[in-house]
Image 1 (tube, helix red, strand yellow):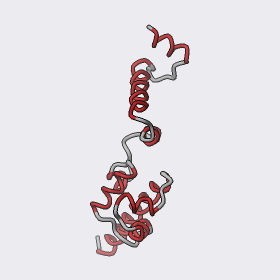
Image 2 (cartoon, rainbow, N blue to C red):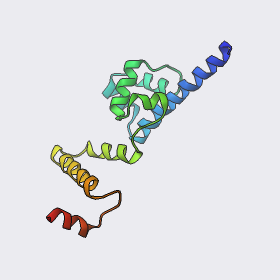
Image 3 (tube, rainbow, N blue to C red):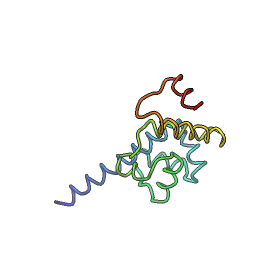
Image 4 (cartoon, rainbow, N blue to C red):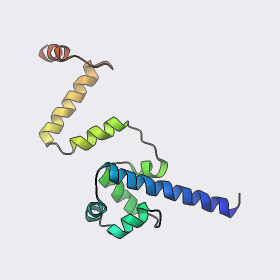
Length: 131
């Protein structure tokens, strides 16, 4: 394989990384300025990274992944182990109080234990909860 093929491959990987970073930020509804304020990465650098004009450093990628609540491997490989609905649930839960998060967790544990992979009716839930 010649050097130009490797170079193109590197450019393609870099652009995919840039696209994933931009998509994650936009999906969460965050501005570049908000990201800059919460990661200490200058807004101009975030713009350049998302446009593929600047490579993202390892520590920057870690900071962005932590803010976006995605594993670093998602940005590098593009795959997530957990379904989108689980990620959405986690994002929504971060805005809840600690007590409410505990309640959501208890409910999830209940559904896991008694749901058997199907949706339980409200009457079934009430019956199981009162037994």
